[in-house]
Image 1 (cartoon, rainbow, N blue to C red):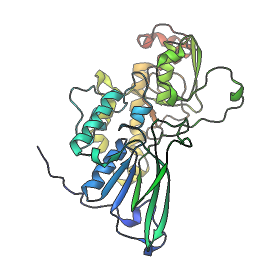
Image 2: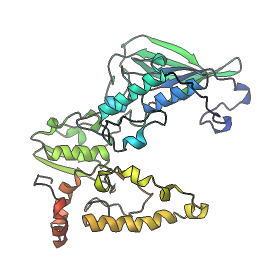
Image 3: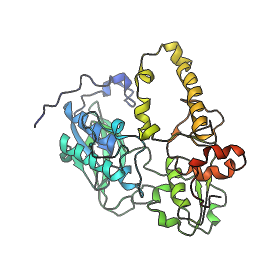
Image 4: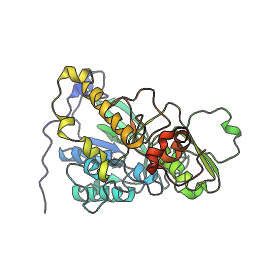
Length: 359
């Protein structure tokens, strides 16, 4: 059934725009908008901008919607946020999907969103944005977007285009919405002696499936959710596995008691009711709940530094001060050396996995 689109009640005030011309004379009515990237944020931006009357063009370098969830996907990867909170407000997740959708399931959801919201006609796939410049024409600010046809994704490991892939062309827009994502360009820190390393060295965005680790001695640098995912896959495939942790992390599983998604447990009345500004400024709620959460961690897993986290502690375990790591499958293997140093490990031995070589 056709539904009428309701325009948004208001737009962002001019003084709150992130970038704007310094001279008031350069202000002009915005009619055409270029959205760079057809990932989740790009699709939502395009939908809402189109609904309030703008002429929208979405430029996507690859041939599919989904962005990182397509091009940097790896074996058995799932969302750590549940389908209940990940879904857009105007399209609920399928009831048949798992609570934490696999990446193919999530991409299929995004494609259904494009179908429902009639977004396909706005998109230009296989179009790589090379640069965006702005200039003032007849007293009005305009953006020149230079693009090139792109057949492969990515063009190289750094996300830059290779010379000679195609002729460039430039289109002019009244505004540009950059939705290329936080994780488009991989960051590799400078490590002394890395150039002389004889083994295989790769960024996590290049990883696809666990057979890469078979029979090797693997070192994972970094303890984010992707790093912990890769460590778990390596420990089941590699000859030996180790992980390097710089400042520690705070581990919390993405599922709570009874398999209920953690984010749905957090999204409750007591977490989101009105809070006096002074209590909020002093972080009173977080300070009080941290005590009970840490006590729960200790009673159920033997460690109050994180859920079943006997190693890799942060200096101060305080709620609201750390980005949670919700990939916890590798923790039992990492914990084994530390747990065996104390008699207390027998109380929580039910969490221990079968023996695997984690150095």
